[in-house]
Image 1 (cartoon, rainbow, N blue to C red):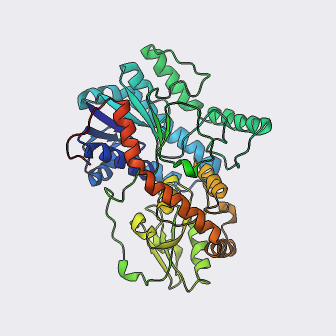
Image 2 (image 1 turned 45 degrees about the horizontal axis):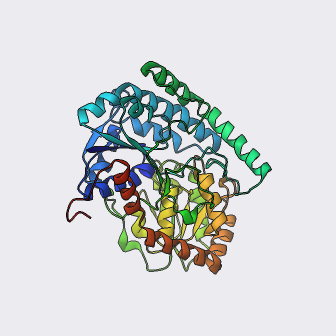
Image 3 (image 1 turned 45 degrees about the vertical axis):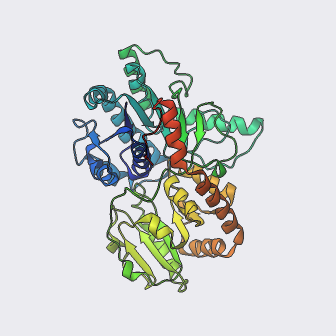
Length: 427
C-alpha cells in the first residue's frame, strides 16, 4: 500500500509532515510526498520521493509571490489573504488535478493536512482511506475550547460556550470562499455532505495533532478518532543553512524568529535589536527569514547576530529564551529543548498557541502592537528571572520526550491504514 502525504507548501507544515512521512518510511512502508513544485528542495532534504501537484495553476516560482505578500500582513488582513489568495485557489486546483495525480502516483491512502480544508472530498469520492494530521494547532469546531484563531483564555460555562460558538460562526463565514469551491466539487462528483456540520468531512479513521496533551487546555475535541501525539520532529531531514557558528560567544542565547510567513515585520526585529543593548550578558540570534534583508535592520549591537535562516533546533539547544510569533512548530521545538518563550502572535493559529503559552505559564505573551524596545526589555527580564516558567517548561519537556510524538503518530497511521507488522529491523 502506497501512502501519500499532502501538505500545505510552507515550512511550518512541511517540516512536521515530512518528518512523519520519513517515520512511516523508516518502518518499511511505501510513501510519497505531494505538494507544489516549489517545495521540492524541502522534500529532497527529507529523503522522500516527491510528486508535484497543481503544476498548471502553480508552476515553479508561484509560491514566492504569495509568501512575500503574506510576510507583510498581520491579524485579520493576513487571515483573509491566507483564505482567499492561498487556500481558495489551491483547493480549487486540487479538485481539478489531484485525482489524476493520485492515480499516476499509485497512491492508495492519504495523510492530509487539516489546514487544507475540504481536500478530503477527493479521497471520499475516490473511496480512498485518508487520515487528518494537524501540523498547526488543531481546529476544533465543537466550542469546547476557543477556536485556535482567537487568543481567549480557556473558560467553562454557558457564557464561555456561547462566546466560543460565535467565534466559530465568524470563522466559518471567513472560510466561505473555500466552502463554495468545495460545494461545487461535491455536487459535480455526486457527494452528499451535511454543510451545516463543520466536522462532516473529518476522517473517520484518525485525526492526529502534534500538539502534546500537556500543552493543550485539557479539553480535547470530542471525537473517538482524535489523538494527541507530540511534536513531529526528530532534528533531521531539513534543508541546510549556512550559519556563522564562529560568531557565537558562549553567552546565553536569546533566539528570535517570526517564522517563515510573517517575517516581513521589520519593526519587531528592530525593537529586539534595540532591547539587546541593555543585555550585554546575553547574545541575541535573529533569524529574519527570506523576505527581509538583514541590512534593513541597519547597525546592530555587538551582541546581536542577524541571519536570514538558522538551524533552529540546534540553536534552541543552546538558548535560554525564544522570541517567536507563536507558530506551533517553533513553540514545540522550544518546549522540547527546555526553553521558555516570549510570544508575539501575528495571525492564523498563533493566537491560540499564545493562549496556551499563557495558560501553561511557559512564557510571556505580548501583542505585536506592544513590540517596543521597552516592552521587550521588561518581558525578557520577567521570563529569565522567574523560575516558574522554567519549571513548567521542564515538565512539558519531560512529557514530550517520554511520549515520542512521531512514534505515536506512526503507530496510529499503521492502524488506520491496516499496514500490518513493521518490516524486520525497521526503526
